[in-house]
Length: 329
Image (cartoon, rainbow, N blue to C red; front, side):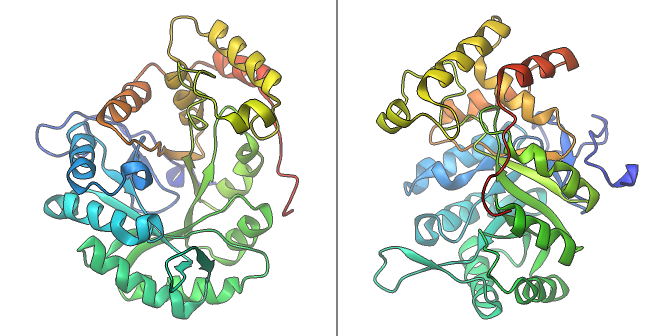
């Protein structure tokens, strides 16, 4: 991969920012011209209280975040409306990402998968209207199966780029067969959003493929539903207590979290969790959600904390599982 096209850590004096806003490291998404704060705001958790949601978004802006991720699926489009209103007066200073591919049923109960060109071309119009903007910085396919007509989806995205409706496109998938197909058939794809955390290291298997095709990982779920915070298992759901988390039994979870805390006695688990992901060049940004100002500030402090060194990274890898995706090969 060309060194000039990697996700680079830009010098502090280059980083663009709003006047009076603290500097935050920016990283490049793939080979695009999108430079995003290393921690973005996953907006799905904002809820439908417009005033509260807009307050959290403005706080994120004031803290140096310029990257906001939403989807037409979230709260039946209301999430996009909240994001659009909050960012309207700083539109040219921020990166807005949204997603398409899921269609709400007419009765409003559930949705169906539709990656067709027709749906994408209609969906982008609706997202633009709700976001109150003329363009979307990063438009993402919100899922995908191997049975989809990928060529038709790619054609739709390419036409939207040419028409100026979107600047770049990516996908949001954890299926290796889907990721491989888009990486090979869509040279202009710049990113793939994936669930990635210390407790879910499966994306590491796909990093070489994505780097080869000059696409970045956008990491969602970096704190593994709150398990990778100082609360640890205190608020584990009944399902986690009964069945564990992903490929960890509950007993294995207890062990790995205990060892992680012992490995970093002077650091919060949240900052270790985010810094582990940010240590990988393949990761352009982490986008933890935040349903409160306190959660947002906790995530920002974690992202701005001291980076991990090589020894610490190896220590984390030694106590956690380097699993791979068993399905959708």
